Image 1: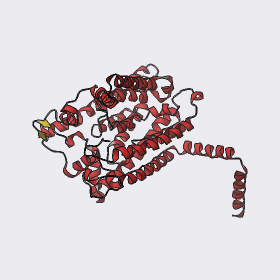
Image 2 (image 1 turned 90 degrees about the horizontal axis):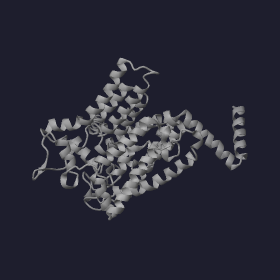
Image 3 (image 1 turned 90 degrees about the vertical axis):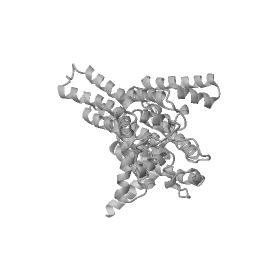
Image 4 (image 1 turned 120 degrees about the horizontal axis):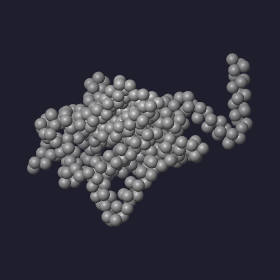
Length: 427
């Protein structure tokens, strides 16, 4: 015991005798070693630390909320009340009342209703509420945190396979600190959808076709991402076909690859089909989605131009800014600085990006939709180059992005979580 104590004291004395830069290098080396050996643990711990930060911010802004604007409010705003605003109130309605058998209409026009929201998340919350006796806000929020932790664990593995554990940890940190990351602890489907999406991408990246099929099919009840995911699956199958001379494709593998493509197709139409069967209206889902649009109609691509025009107040300027954003996104994604992310993540970025351009009514909710574009963070931290010598200042870039994300997150919570009028700006 005395010998051990003496050695510990000697190590402590040596550490104190080192200069500050040397001590920093030692701690940095220890941190890198820990990340390389315990990537999953480090990623989940980092995610939870950032969720504590978000919880503190949400609790602080809760005091600025007017309870009269909040559905299901108990008259006192606190953290748990803040976790189920906006879409959270729709999921609470689904948990408590289910989906309507008849679409609500006003003058023959379908009104906003629960059929716009996919059922897997509220079903999971319903089961856990009955098992635990907990409230919707507490059970739903904690479920989102757990699923978010699973998602960042899968994300770390997906990214690690291409660019290594240290970069994977950096990506997780920037992602977990990003402005819309509080939705990962709110009663929203982002956490669940990320688990399924990243699971599918990881399976496609590793050519585990049956796992990819299962994950893709599950997205059909969790989030409308099956269409861009199908593009990724098609590219993954094509890449495997290109390897047929070096690695022949067996008949069972052809069957498995075909099942992945079919699963994506089925998932894309699964929830609209269920809505149609339950309500007796073939267009129940699209009619419901249109109720959130101006004029109650869905027009592809147009909302981006219209909303940018409204935001900028100048059509020419709006067109210029939108064009720069689109071109910039493509350049960032297809350039050599993104080669290391691999075909699966790169294809997902492009497919999902243009899917959003086609179907999304871009406004303040766009923030949380961008969470699914997490692979682009590999480029943002400067680690997308295949040549490791070109991956410069990855650590410092990560620190900067984390700092910016946390500051922006405070603005996000203060601006979008606090309702100052009935309509507000949705998250």
